[in-house]
Length: 115
Length: 115
Image (cartoon, rainbow over all chains, first blue to last red):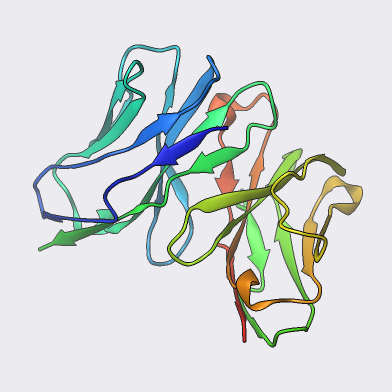
């Protein structure tokens, strides 16, 4: 069974600074995707960034990047130049291939951005 | 293009009553998922439809939960009779088979409160 662990229930960052959210996972699958989802207070959950397990290069999407350490089963999210709109719950998720592709989520990290 | 929609956004019912949640996926998406987040815990998978067929219902808590997807379009999730522990946010997501990165698109969720 897959598990995803987010060890930081809450984090805060000053506007324009950089913050890193941690995520570790465990899966017996060899082929899988990893995701970071963001859920702002309005509750619509949106995809921030994704990483294919077979790719060694870390994914980046504008101010968002990941540090993917496959051997350590670690998948942290770095947010650079934090903005007030980045304040949200962030969920890390894993998706094993070859089955229903259901997502296994961590408990989430609540990010506060201070002006 | 319209996203995933869910109705109602909030529902407050008493223990023992019945509630039906509805999800309209993105048009053309053959995969539909239901997830639930109980306060402070992980978002957990409930079940997965491919078109009108249940592909995986391993996450359904018990037989008080009944999901349907008639015609392979919208889906309903009925809880009968509701219990206090059913309170939480119910998310629906849809995905297109063969779409990039197996991305699931989430609805805003239905917040269910059982008193």
